Length: 333
Image (cartoon, rainbow, N blue to C red):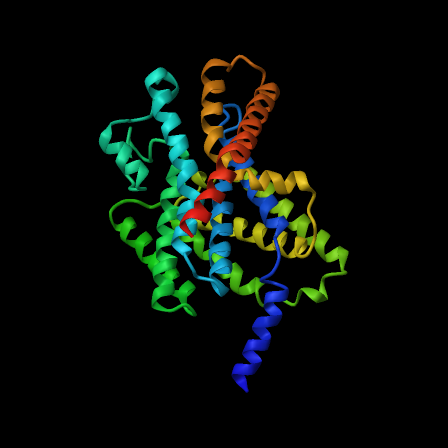
C-alpha cells in the first residue's frame, strides 16, 4: 500500500513540480551573469555575488534533474559546459599571442593549457585560476558535478547529504592549507532549496498575487543589499558563505516561489538562455574597454560593454553553443 501511494505521489509530482520549465530561475541566471559582467567593468567593480547566485541555482538544478532521471548525468554536464569553455579558451590563447597587453595577468604554456582544459586548479600570476579567468568557477562546478554523481552512486536518496558532507570536508581541508574561500560550499544552499521547494503546495499561492509581489520585493531588496555590502570588509573565513551565500539563497527561494507556474517575458528568459555564453565572453570585452577606452564616460562605458557582450553572447549561443550541444547530445547520448 505504501509503495502504491509513493508511486501515485511521484506521478502527481511529475505533472507539476517535475514537468515544467522554470522561467523565473532562467531569468535569475541571466541577472547573475549581468551582475558578474558589471563586476568586471572598471568604473563599477561590484557584482561578483552573481557567482553565489549561480552556485545556488546549480545546486538546485542538479538535485532536480537527478531526481527522476540519472541517465548519462555526467556526460550531460560535460556536454553543457566543456565545448563552449574550450572554444573561449582557444580564443584566449589566440588573443594572447596577438596582444599580450589584454591578457597581462594570463600565464599560457603547455602545462597551463592542459590544466585549464581539464579543470585542474593552478596558480597563475599569483591567483588560482585557469587561462579563461572567469573559468575558476567552472573548476568548482565540475568538481560539484563529480561529487553529486559519486553521491548518487552511493545512495540516490541521500545524495544531497553525502555531497554536502564532502563539500564541507573539502572546504575544511583547504582551509587547513590556507585556502579560505568557502564559495564551494554554497552548492549546499541550492540542494537545501530543492528539498524545501519540492515540498511546497503551490496551489495555495497560485492565485495570490500579493504573495508573489511580496516575495519579489524581498528578492529585490536582498539583491540591493548585495550591491551595498562588500563581504571583503568583514573578517573571518566564513564571510562569503554568510554575507553572499545566504542572500543568494534568499533571492533564489523568493524568485522561484514568486514565479512558479508563471510565464516570464521572453527577453528575460532569453537572457538566461545566453547566460553561459555571456559569462564566458564578457570578460574580454570588459578588458578591452577598461584598457583602451577608459576615456569613455561611466554610463556610456557600461552601455558599450553590456551591449557588445550581449550581442556576442547571443551570436555565440545561437551559432555555436546551442547547435553544438544539440549535436553532441544526439551523437553521444
